[in-house]
Length: 122
Image 1: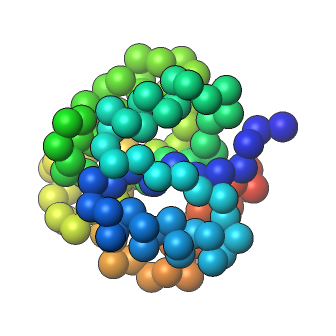
Image 2 (image 1 turned 30 degrees about the horizontal axis):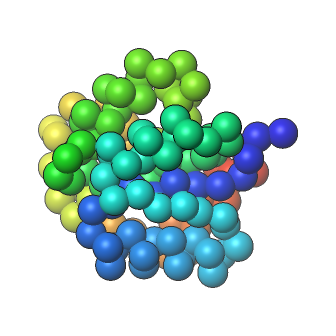
């Protein structure tokens, strides 16, 4: 059985903690990473892979675009659904990243329901 957890990648500590708390309050197991590089390190060291990745768009060290390129090159990670979370509603940049995106201020009920569906495999 696949592990049922979500990974949240965001360089903004407060934003990352807010999403992790929101998910935890909805009964969803979640782990956080400060940037794409830290996330790739965590993913490479863990035999369990998340059912969903929420990825901040603009980050230092390894941003969303670089993370998605590295993710696509790793067959163990390429199939993990990934959604970009951003304060920036830049459609062109989001398209270049190659993943659907949500604005961070999305409705919390919708956000948690989306994560629960991904974790349940529905």
